[in-house]
Image 1 (cartoon, helix red, strand yellow):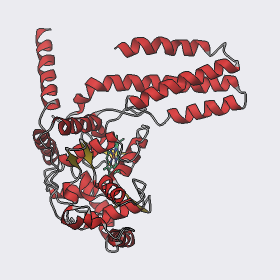
Image 2 (spheres, rainbow over the protein chains, first blue to last red; image 1 turned 120 degrees about the vertical axis):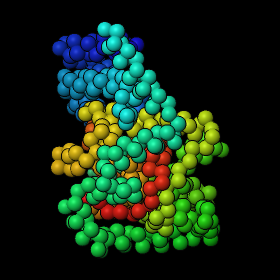
Image 3 (spheres, each protein chain N blue to C red; image 1 turned 90 degrees about the vertical axis):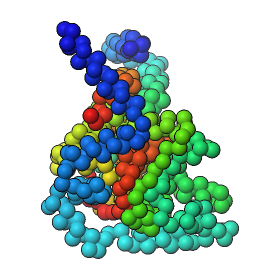
Image 4 (cartoon, chains in turn green, red; image 1 turned 45 degrees about the vertical axis):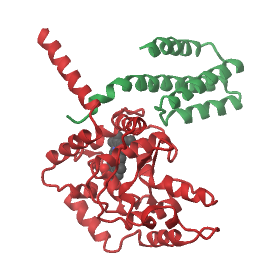
Length: 101
Length: 276
């Protein structure tokens, strides 16, 4: 549960910031957050294969100075990482529901 | 309200009791689940995967096996196995019984290193101790070597052990948890497909029972046009649910293979095999 209280506000800030943030440093920041959350999913053993391509595309967009695209993509990656982390947290206890009876 | 509460408590206890069962109890429950679900399939029949369930597919598969597509790769595996290292030694020097007829004992738990050793890891350990470069995992040479070692183990019964050690049990439990945990963007566990929905169809494919999965690897898949190890096949399943596959012989994969193979204890090795 603790993880949700940390991650959900973070997610909300990410989404809210997209409308305004268009600068290079804001794009870099969005990518940094995306990188961090992505790494956390790997540590948790629940990486989705949809995250890596989004982060790569975000970095590519930053390279071509398309900051708003970079931010959108990085935030999308972050959203997915948050969901993957919630999945990891959930499965810590709920995996037993799949045991054969 | 009270009875609902009682039901909840009882089901929680039931869930917990199977979560903390011994490996041997797990195996009994696991195998009984499938033998009750498919009363017409013999225990060893499960080693044929979907071809134990689908007669049409089986007919095609048997026709293909008149000239097994893996013959050449298997011969290459034998050659590789017998080719001496630059120090003159061979794989046979690294293994019990000269490396013949031993597949059924893998993965094993090494109580010195406190880790699960799969056959492919043992092959690379052997190379390392003889000063040879490590092979890439999952396909290529290592899969051919492993296929040959499976071939020399035909009909031996899988006999994976959990030594009396805290670490061995922890590795087993971790593998078990991996198998039953939902993962990937599609939120499926291995069990969702290969236990709860075994025999049903997912898109155009029949889902095989997990019982018998490890009996016939490495598998020569037509799609791969070559051999792949069990871990390579698990990669494909992870991708199907949009989970990121792990690197070959990562701890999670080794533990998963340990659990999965333990569940098939008592089934005969019947590989290498061909698959679509």
